[in-house]
Length: 263
Length: 289
Image (cartoon, rainbow over all chains, first blue to last red; front, side):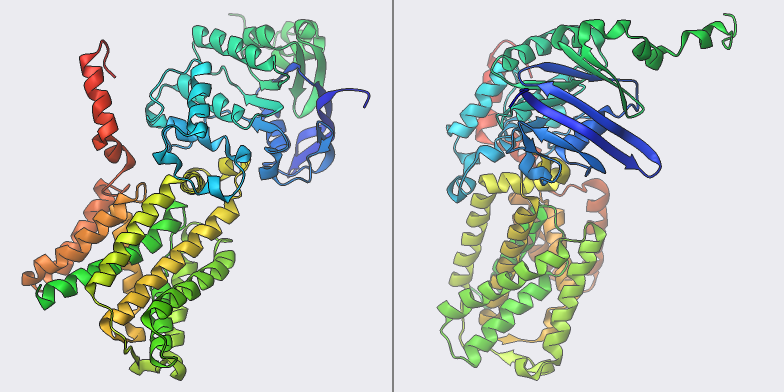
């Protein structure tokens, strides 16, 4: 046990037909760290999340979560292994109330037939419901827990999804563009909230386009471009990296050659 | 109580149990268009156990319910490999196979059908219907109910939440089969006679319509849908065959105007006592919702 990596990808490769969406990706997320996964559109960031959570099988490579190999584990068991995630386009259950969505997140902690068949909806004081309501409050979500999720504002639903992911008490939390669509105040609140939960040994892996959010939250960054990793290091140095700048903005000489018409 | 009224109420009880047998899998996202097949299994199981094996009613009914549930369990594995319209077709085919099998099997009386000696009256039917409705309310209030609704809403996310989607679906389909079987067993004992032609595809279609038009979002849906569509044709009996035209038009209008069903979750939430209390508090308070 030399290196304490919460998550370790080694040679992770995935092809969709002729398109290589993950090309021999190898990187480690140190335990307790907050890492950002960035890259231009179509770089394969969400694909990496889908490979880790098991939406697609790998073509080759290994994924280790706290030393447990994930690549052959059925997706539904990966939650129990300590993995939780949110989704780029909110995937709350539309016909479940706020608190029911959050209680769904507790599923892996629920043991035994008796708890499966106790009338949860009739027990307003049950410990599961209180746990869910307290977690919503801790995240600063001040809505009626029985309201329908579909009528709530985007920013609130986004944060409910984070709370739902936290319900399984994960060791690694993967958030797919948590700040997208949030206003500056909500973004700042989210960042503060994520920092506070990350203090209890939770490891964060965050896909995000908002660079000020990334700088504020994440000490480490991995940059992907066309399924390849082009940067793995501290967040503060990422913008100085020549290859990263080229991936986002194009190479300097292309611009100077005058391919753009004069404005 | 007149014979006519108790006859209508008996059908209502049987239809209600049958409808909840379709509702439980539907709440977990599975459309079962083979309901008549399960009802036939319950009815013929009871008929055989009652007339040939001469078992008493309190054994024939649970036994045939168990058989229908077991067949539902076994059938769920191939059926759950299909989705959407293919699941509808697979269950429809199952219903047809059962009806065809019963019609061709001398052992079960063939086209002549079977006489069921033991009679069960309206009070027992009503008790069973009330129990099934209460049981379904209970089931949907449990965490298992929450999981069924999650599977219906977004199967892929349910898997990533750690839910054993297959187990939930198999359980729902099995419970549904057993309830439809119970309705068949009660039908057999109440009508004292079963014939394969009764369990045809129309029966499957009607009961599915009761459930879908009533709404699958809440347990109230099948209760409302079944009651309206069982009692309405009786009320309109004066109109002769025109009632089928009206029935058809109502179905088309429902699909156009309210595809989510008559009763929705939001509607129940609006009239719940807790919500009314909350609203009064808000109106009296400083800010609106």
